[in-house]
Length: 309
Image (tube, rainbow, N blue to C red; front, side, top):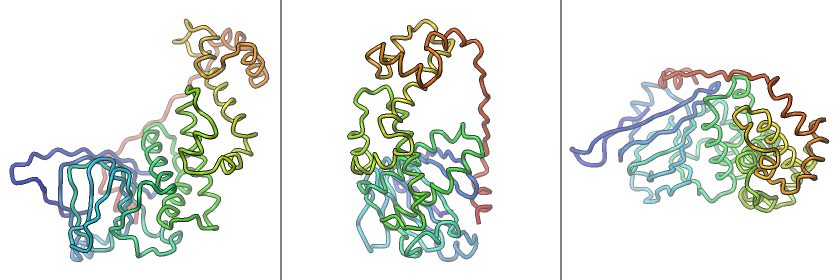
């Protein structure tokens, strides 16, 4: 997609890693490489006819313009935007980034100014940018194990969230998928921190730059935030109880590790939620069904990009 030159002297060593996944017509990936200059000339644009928007979070190092129009560079967490239909001259230090490449046809209809984002930097402190970065990081982590139908289901909300970050606000037309993307990101955060006794509505609201009132509103369909967290903790206890590798752990130990400090309260909540006691679940553990996780790989990066037109 770019003409590149190393920016560390003639003797600089070169080593790069690129990992990517194709989800429908969207490419998601991460890359690390030494300092480079990136160029995309009008001649190259006419030759390959790529018409995509690339969003990159520089998690390490920095990126900035080389055309002299600005000396601003990205800081870790900032979002750098490249319009592949426009000429580019940029430079990076040694870097690692998280990136998503979207065909213009699927994101431009959601943008208020679709031609105005090229080589722009969006602050990593902006709540919408934080949400997008967190969402892409989680999606990249889970991508190897996602079923195709699950990946396709999250594609629309992902595009809507990317557009919202670029627009700087949520357009009414994309409010529903944007809310879905927020919820997916928050729920993944909760899942990762279920064992943390400090997990609370206040901590989650602060993490995602929203008010507690807004958070409570989002979780109303689940019976409220506290109910949702308790249900997820009970489900995690259930999985631990039927895991043959955890047979040596006591029920009380499993419950306490997931925030249930009072055995009687845990027993009542578990029985009410699961329809049987924790002891009964453990006794039936040998009947657990294990479903295989589908896994697909493909290393034809350039073919992915060209087929996304």
